[in-house]
Amino acid sequence: MSDSQLLVSISESAQSHFARLLESQAEGTQIRIFVVNPGTPNAECGVSYCPPDAVEEKDLKYSYDGFDAVVDPESAPYLEEAEIDFVADQMGSQLTLKAPNAKMRKVSEDASLIERVEYILVSQVNPQLANHGGKVSLMEITESGVAVLQFGGGCNGCSMVDVTLKEGIEKQLLEQFPGELTGVRDVTEHEAGEHSYY
Image (tube, rainbow, N blue to C red; front, side, top):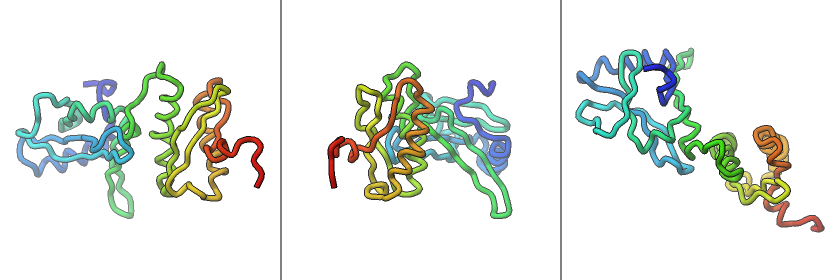
């Protein structure tokens, strides 16, 4: 099976890691790749052993070097562009799973601007903010092409919110939606309107 048909890209080091692990398992055991709570902010990508009797008829099967991976059809759309890597360094070894579409399935190119902007926020922006306990959601896109965002979690009331918004999020969104978005505003700034005084 060629790589283009593989749903999840598994690095060579991760493939040999899985092949080694499976050597000590019962004959016919495969790897199962799945997403728990797919399409939600709590989505988590996981890998487990899958003995032959746990493979279901509807499971999708992908062949890798020395083993097969099975994926349930519900998880599949959320595993598009997922990557599994195995990194070994002085600190030990670690299996890393990246599933950019786990929290929200990939939207098509011809989806509405709102859907496409939401997808970028969920799959790219929020994972960066999550390190600080923050998240951002799209409230609306104005007629003039301004994305109005609501900051939540650790971003609320954070003095860095303007910097994060302007330097990071606005730049990223304008680069990804040239000609469609003209700017980004925080909902609080938007609600305050043009004439607010303090």
